[in-house]
Image (cartoon, rainbow, N blue to C red; front, side, top):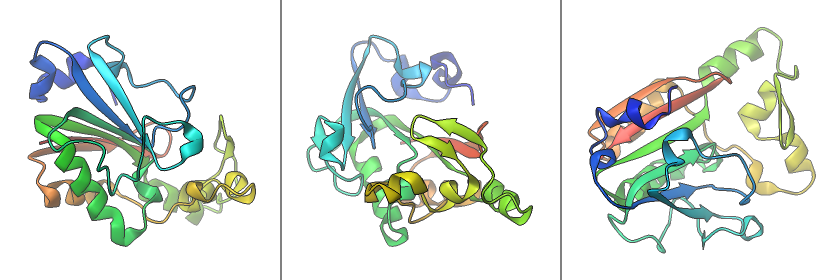
Length: 199
């Protein structure tokens, strides 16, 4: 997905405002982790890092299901990369509700999750244990995408377990259900989905 500011400006109202913009980065991980998408690398964005794991040294220690430290309508955008699949399935809707709560009207969620449909196809083809790519955490296989990174889980990092999952239709359904007006989802390049949902 093209994550440039220009690509998003046409239907994300808050990108056309002047002045600083607040980005709530949920499941942010450690400060030296992956770079933010291009659309958030502008100096006008102020990143607030939220993570459930205190070892990640976030600005706010919290789950995406309860971000009490973030005021209602306090964020212009929320970025969630490989976070929502770590929620128990019965908590998934609450996670989307909480994101909706913290966004200003006209704000948006940019979300990236594994694509269950693509992963299921790989597993049905007998590739469950085949290494697809290497990440900072180590090799990634379809089984890791489905249940969470097994090497991290083996080392005791229980936060890495996957407890729910999304297809494009399921991701859209959750976003619309909690009140987002415009939701666009498409396949990414690593057996994943990218979605933009505007409040």
